[in-house]
Each structure stands twice: as C-alpha cells, then as structure tokens.
Length: 44
Image 1 (cartoon, rainbow, N blue to C red):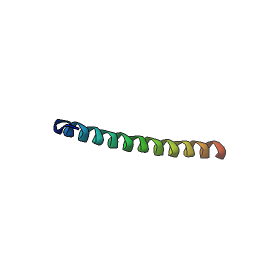
Image 2 (image 1 turned 120 degrees about the vertical axis):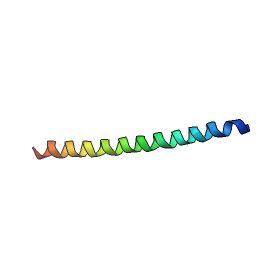
Image 3 (image 1 turned 180 degrees about the vertical axis):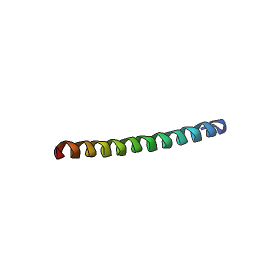
Image 4 (image 1 turned 60 degrees about the vertical axis):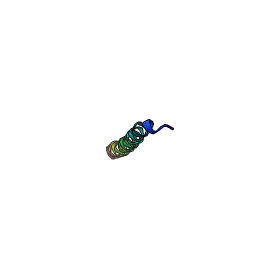
C-alpha cells in the first residue's frame, strides 16, 4: 500500500461499515414487518 492510498482505504472502510449497518437495519425492519404481517394474517 502507498501512503497516498490511506485516505481512500479509510473512506472505503467507513462506507463498508455504513452499508453493513444499513443492511442490518433493513434486515431487522423486514423481520419485524414480516412478523407483524404474519401475526395479523394468523389472527384473522
């Protein structure tokens, strides 16, 4: 690795972390939405 690449790599790391957090958030909201939907469906 070259010195000049360090900021780019740091930015890529930050972006990867952010997208992982977003993906985790989407997965949890999807799970919640699915469980609410199935509860409503079963409840009827």
